[in-house]
Image 1 (tube, rainbow, N blue to C red):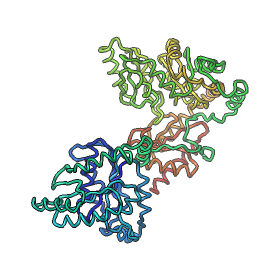
Image 2 (image 1 turned 90 degrees about the horizontal axis):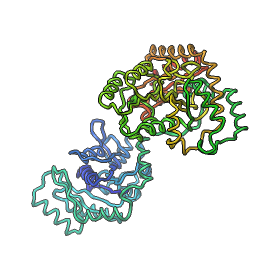
Image 3 (image 1 turned 180 degrees about the vertical axis):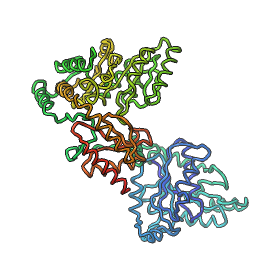
Image 4 (image 1 turned 45 degrees about the vertical axis):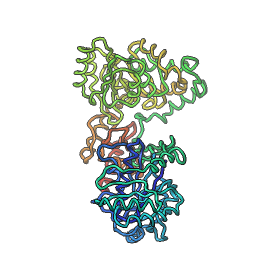
Amino acid sequence: MLNILVTGSDTAVGKTRAVGALARHFLIEGHSVQIVKLVETGVTKEVRSDAEEAMLYATANKVSGRIESFTLASFSEPLAPFSAAKLENKSLSLKLLIDSALKLPAFDVRLYEGAGGIASPITEDAETVTDLAEALGVELVIVVVADKLGAINQAKLSGDKALELGLPFGVWLNSTAWVEPQLALSNREGILISKIPLWAELGYNSDTAKFSNDFTALLKKQSSESTDYRISFEERLKSVLYERDNKKLTRILSVNSKTKARVNLSDNDYLNLAQHPALIHAGQKALQEYGTSSSASPLITGWTKAHENLVNDLCQWHALPSGIVWTSGFAANAAILSTLPKKGDLVFADKLIHHSMIAGLKRSGATVKRYPHLDLVVLETWLKSAKDNHPLANIFVVTESVFSMDGDYPDLLKIAELKNKYPFIWILDEAHALGWYGIKGAGLASYYGVSKSVDILVGTLGKTLASAGAYSLFNSVTYRDYLINFAGEFIYSTALAPSNAVVASEAIKVVSKLSSEHNYWHALSRDFRKCLKENGWKTLEGESPIVPVHLKSEVAALALSEYLQKQGILAYAIRPPTVPVGTSRLRFSLKDGVTEQDLNEVIQLMNEWRQKV
C-alpha cells in the first residue's frame, strides 16, 4: 500500500482539492484509494467533511473505482486541533490518531490530508503532522502551496520542514483564484531556483492536475520498490471484512448458549427432539455397532445397512419409491440442480429459494428465471410461453414448501394443477415443513396430497429429525441412478455417519406419533401472530413454525435480539445478505413444548424494549 501525506504551507491553500485531484488520478489508473483526514476542526452537520469533499471531487464526471473516506478526529470549533479538543473535553494525542489509522482497511493507495500548515502543532505536546506522518510510515510528502504572491517563501519554509522527515517531498502549486500569468511564471521560476521539487500544478477551475516527469517517475518507482502498490491478498481480504464490519454484517462464531436460555425460539429443532431419550439411545447403540464414521464414499464401503434402512423408512414416510442420503442439505440441493438441468433447459425458480439451490443452478448451464416470490400467475405465464416457444426444452420448477426466513409457502395444489397443464420436472425442498405438516409429519406435499406430483423431494435430517445430513426422494428411480453416477457431491464425499442414519430413522417414528399435536401447534402459531399484530408488530399470517417480525433496521433487529437474550429468550436477528436489504427481522422458531404463556411473555418483553428506545 502506498502512503502519501498531503499537507500545506498554511491553512486554506487547497489541500482538500489537491487530495481529490490526486485520488482522481489514481482511480483513473485503476487503483483503489482511501482518503484519510487526520484531524478536522470547524465541523458542522450542514457541511461535508474535507474527506467527503475530496472523494466527491475525485469521482466527478463519472470517474469511478473503489474509494472510501475517513476522518480520524473532528471537532466543532474552527481552532487549532488541540484547542478545539480541549473545549469539547476530548483527548487528542498522536497515539490515538495512529491507533485509529492502523485499524483502517488496506487500499492500494492511502492519502493522508493534514490539518493547517506543515508546522502547525496538532497536540498540546506540540507534535505536528510530520511527527504523525513518520509514525504512520508515509513514503511521500506533498506540500500544497497557494499559487499567489508569497508562494516562493511559503514553498521554501515548508520544504525545509518536510526535509526533516528524510522522505521524498515536493510542492503542489494550487491556484485557489485566477493568477496573473507573469506572477504564475515568477512563482515557478523562484521555486525551481530554490531547488525545491515542483511535483504538480492545479490550475484555477481545472479538473485535472499536471504532474512533473519527476513525480510520475517517482510514483512508478514506489510502485515497484518499497511498499507493494497493489495490496496483498490477505490485506484485500481484511479490507473486505472491515467494510462488512462497518456495515454490521460480519458473521461470527459464538459458543452455543441455549442451555442458559429459559425459552429457545432460535433453532430449527421444531419438535424439540435433539435431547429426546429414544434418539440418544438409538445413537449410542449405533455407535457401538458401526463406530463413529462411515469412513468412505457411499460407492466404496460407506453405504451401510443403516443407510439402506433409513432410505426405506423415508420412502414409506413420504410414499415415494426411491431415494438417497447426503452429507448436508446444501450438498443435496447443489448437486441435484447442477447435475440434472443442462444447457438448453429452462428452470423457473421462486425468487427466494435457498442459496444452496442458487449455487447449484449457477453451475448447471441451464437458463434460469426467478419468478416473484409465490407468484404462480407469473409462473403460469412463463410455463405457457415455454410450452409454445420452447417445445423441446426440459422445464424445471424449483421451490421450497415452507420458506425458511418468513415461514410462508406456495399453493402446492396450484403447482400440481399447473404440472398437469404444462408438464415440467418439479423439485421441492421440504426442509422446514417436516414434522409440522402432513400425514405422520411428512411435510406440506403430504398435507396437500400432492406428493406423487413432486418429481424430486429434498428433506433435511438436521432440523425436525434432530440428526445430521439430508435426503432426496424420487418419483423415478432414473433420477436417483443418474445422480449416483454423476453427482460429485455424492460420489466424492465420505458417506453420512451410520449413527446419524440410525438416529434419523428413530426420529421418524417419534415424529409420526407427535403428528396428533399438529392442530395445537398451528393454533399456537396463528395466535402468536395475531397477538404480535395487535401489539403493533409487523409479521405475516400463517401457522408454520417460523414467525418473522420485520423491523426498521439491522440495528433495531440486533438490539431487540440482545434485549430478549438478556431476559433468557433466544430469538436471533436475521440481516442482509441472508435476507434482502431493508427486511431485517427477528425470526422466531416455534417448537413442541413452547407454551402460550411463553409467547405472551416474549411479546411483553418486546413491548418493554420498544418503550425504552
